[in-house]
Image (cartoon, rainbow, N blue to C red):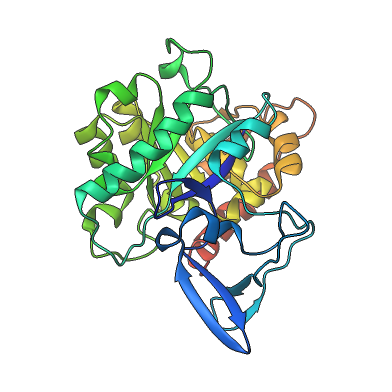
Length: 315
């Protein structure tokens, strides 16, 4: 299992973890919005809860998808931190997936992409001993069994960053291409389908694809295409918090799922086993082999009818 960090590199070259592209704050009822990558490290760390109680913090706000601006609230508040701090304090039994954050609406010069990649890799190389938390493997990664290191390390990368991941990096990192699998439109056509993502992996010798789950459910034949090229397929998205949807992916050959409900889905995956496929149609010929609990033919039939509706829903 592995936890996930969305990584930005500050203006002075320090990798930090933050979910959004922008930081919002408020001063005398005026909103201020700044891109994380335009901040110096000290500026970034000055927002929200402070590590040292005597320091004055700036309010941390968040812009919602509907345009509302709200205070950033969580069940447990903690201070903003660097990638190195996370690596130093994370349990050695957990892994870490680095998702490099770049704005879809900006064309970055190669030197900027390389600068960000090098900054992250320097921290990673110095501290790496990690893998797998919110990522739940649901199939074996047999084609990676001959890795020379005891843990698989992987990075979600944008299209142009993939060009910079040389063969030297591929010796040490499990590098996957991140895509929405055709569930959203981008100017860069390589990001507009699962098939295009697989082609990027083949072109740059990457190890596989991380796709929005609906993109995989809409295009199951792409899994076979990936397997033929010895590529892993992983998925993310709200549907991965539905155990039946994860089971369908297990049957399809998806290698792993990124989830929010870690314990619940982990327990469900532990019960999965392959069905004995008959010679009739899938919905009326599955004989589920059980470990403790699995899904009945009626449940699977219902899910197969429900999936077309689910994959049409917005995020």
